[in-house]
Length: 381
Image (cartoon, rainbow, N blue to C red; front, side, top):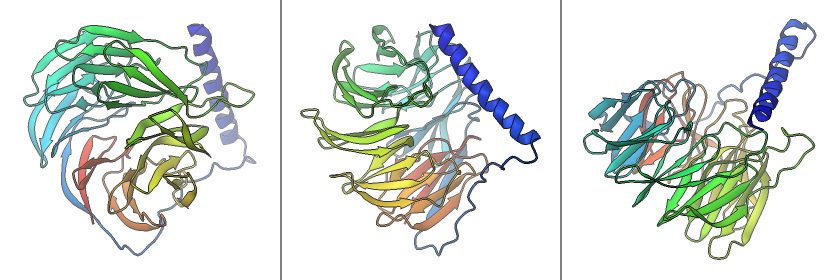
């Protein structure tokens, strides 16, 4: 079955590449749509640079930095992991085997995964290695660090529960994976002693961290279509919890919000999401696969506004701040959109390598990590 899935994926990829080649050779073919130019606007807000630093390049992976109080712990594909305070490095180490995922951390522990299928825990204060555990799987998403456990998700959608004291494997969760899925570094939400993760097929599941037992499962979206490609409906990004409301988004699917006390669907709206989502008290924000940023009413799902002038700029998931909605793009620009109507109100530039992971809140500041390994912190105001 594994071989069949691999062959199916390779065949689909080969077909797409073949069509692209034919378009290049055919002088009558329609040119591919171009990236939208940067819209002109009169700034009414700013993204002021506060500090910057450098870590290793991302290469083919996506590296999400971790925020610990006012500090940042970041990693790159070559194996470098560093903790930055105000742009200065407090410590820096090199992990053998290269790295494949971003950093999961709390005040005591920072956890990464290497190309040899190992999970490595570092002392968050000094960078000294605490332990390493073999999971024999590719890890694309930053590990989750909870009170007693480290939760690791592999690219084949297995979930591992490791003892945070020594990395001992406590439990493993397996589920059937559809024939085609996104190579998507979906993360997780950790709350008390529960982990919430999204899966292919549009499912959202909660686990008891003590034993890996499934507590509940909800449907964000249902696969639809005649082909395996059309039926991809993977939950993307991290689920978002606000009080008793849990929301998640799916590619070729929907944005759905649930009451966590009873599992009831509060509302669901057709949206094909590229990455994760964000929310504030009033609205839910999501980046569509068309590179439009949409705001939905957090209580009804009604459309509030939609910013579609950044087409084909390969936007990140959004970050809602008090100053506006922040998204990054493939040219390394950081855009600040109005909370009220989605209009452009501010813009800043990092480097030309692009931003592939969602901006992070660093207190009142905004943090982005570029594909070239640039760590950039801005003050939105």
